Length: 241
Ligand SMILES: NC(=O)c1ccc[n+]([C@@H]2O[C@H](COP(=O)([O-])OP(=O)(O)OC[C@H]3O[C@@H](n4cnc5c(N)ncnc54)[C@H](OP(=O)(O)O)[C@@H]3O)[C@@H](O)[C@H]2O)c1
Image (cartoon, rainbow, N blue to C red; front, side, top):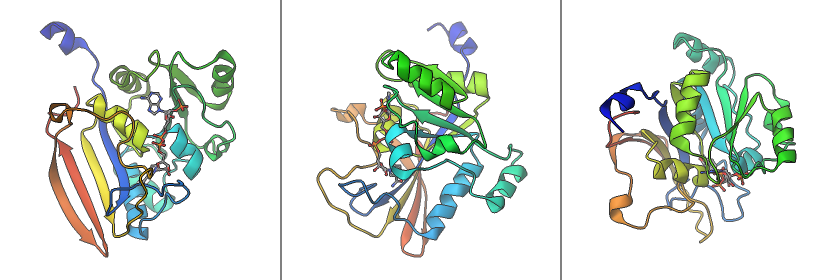
């Protein structure tokens, strides 16, 4: 890309990932039924981070399993949003490359803020039509996998998303890491061990096969509240481009 065309290409949002994991690095049990295991402090932390986001994004399986509605956490956190000059509610983004997201998921019954679905050309026509009824916008961005650099630039240009919070799961996180799109990681380490070879971790999917392909982060802060460690890692690369 020439320096001129790079300067002209629209920016992507700042992307931060928030996850809770056990001391053995798991984000859920092997049977995936236990996905919420942090303290009340960790839940507040999640809503505090949402208050700093224009949009919150999750993968299809997380939306179905946790039945999250990606809300703002109520009046206390709504106030924080207002203080930060943000609208009352964050936008909600679901990633579903094949369009398999369950139309009965709780998120679709809660209409407080726009829902955007990112999908790919793999989505069958009947599913695409159904998703268009459920969401405020369905964006096809990619042939088989989401093209995240393009999708994120589109979110910024079309929906004015400057700060995008990703709340997993591991497959979505992995795609973002592989695309080099993650600027910051907020990781709460909880004093529990789940074990289980198939229990999911913060980054699942394909991962990388060479050390040189690993995304580099540095520790920004570590704080202890009660029995949990609240850590922040920042990307070694320089901000969104
Ligand atoms: N502890 C925590 O903080 C935390 C947070 C979140 C989730 N979790 C847990 O994590 C588990 C879910 O994680 P998961 O990794 O199985 O699922 P996920 O990442 O939530 O969702 C995976 C789905 O998202 C879509 N997707 C992700 N990346 C894509 C890409 N690059 N291109 C196209 N589509 C893409 C696909 O949907 P389609 O199949 O529709 O194509 C894929 O099957 C659950 O057990 C949940 O409770 C824990």
